[in-house]
View (cartoon, rainbow, N blue to C red):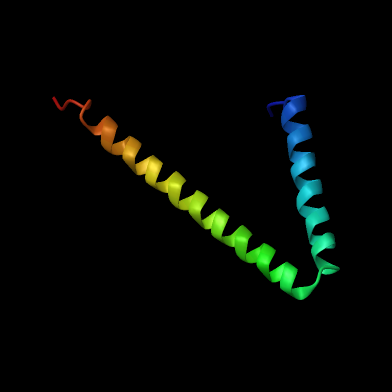
Length: 70
């Protein structure tokens, strides 16, 4: 099993803490604030996912001209 670097472990811990802490913070928020925040997070996540998928397929299209068949 490969050892994880210190940076990877720290980043995973920080992300886990941020996500877990956000859940506790949102439970005490006003419902309007919570819904606005979650709607914004959903839109951002959706846009990021769309951009990554589009970039992946564009990179496949760009690389397809370099393939040769025998």
